[in-house]
Image 1 (cartoon, rainbow over the protein chains, first blue to last red):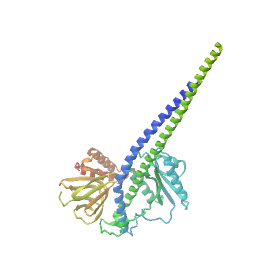
Image 2 (tube, each protein chain N blue to C red):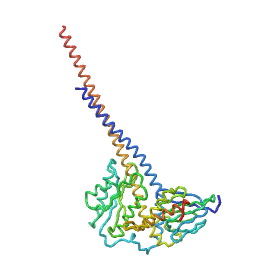
Image 3 (tube, rainbow over the protein chains, first blue to last red):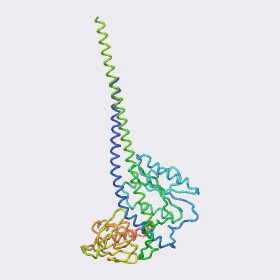
Image 4 (cartoon, chains in turn red, brown):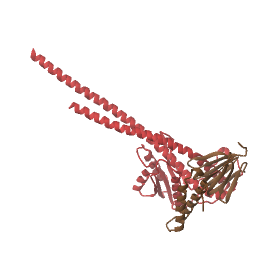
Length: 294
Length: 138
């Protein structure tokens, strides 16, 4: 009977060890994927920054361009939210935090007007499908984000905006700070607010030739700016997801270790108790024999 | 080597395709091809889908297929921003040919349910890639 208790402990320890191996492997996989996601974010920086700088300069020389993507609408009837989560769970509170940030942003909008959700990632899709207001979904983007994904989302959003299905669009994603910290961020996507020039650049006016014209370049640039902003958000989200998963799996591995330790301790105690019992039995029996002999 | 060269970078959202010294670049601007040599005035130009050609410092001519974008030239530094860009020698000619045929078929059929502009763009991209790979024929 005491032996059965020990066997039960052994079984449980083995089961926790198996789980620990899985979480440890997942942590290492996430670490590798995180590195790749960070490299991708790094590789996209020259494009994003040049585009941003060019737009800032163009915005400064073309005040009078009336582009639909730039114009603030007087009568805002519906607000769109692009919510970027992961396709999978097992990454701590990562998905929950983003959805909570989205819901807070929606609730805090004092105009109390209609809103629509563009869900990127299965977790956001599943959440908003249960409630009303899911306008579009983009899922299964995988671990290697390609620019084509961002362009597709961008085209959808720009179309919806141009057809006046939505009058403002916000982007909600997790900004990657470090492995332990990912900050849910809400940024305005449409109408576009042209970025400001850098401080040191402000006074320098370079006399560019614009071919064919500054206005036309601006028109061609704006949709691409949306694409690059979404691409950037997708990359940040991917890095955040893997960072969050790494932390969550690291904690899980540690917890499994603690459970194994306490189970091992309990098992050893039980074994000791069983041995002590047996010794007491033997000693008791021997005493009895001795007494009987006298 | 020669002092008539300047820096040319070709940048896409996914990578910096190349960054090297060139002596001459021709880009497919909206209103026709545009050549850029050293000491060009500051320039920003919108680009079409097409082929960017350049002569590198060693004097050999190379091609890159780009799917539209911009070029910015300032202080002898040219930077091309394109959504996609591929070196001519990297292009999978068979795939590009297949893409071209597919796009042409779609355009010929003129079916109601196809996106006409999209098919046209796809055809332009396929032709640009074939031209860059040096495998284009009418």
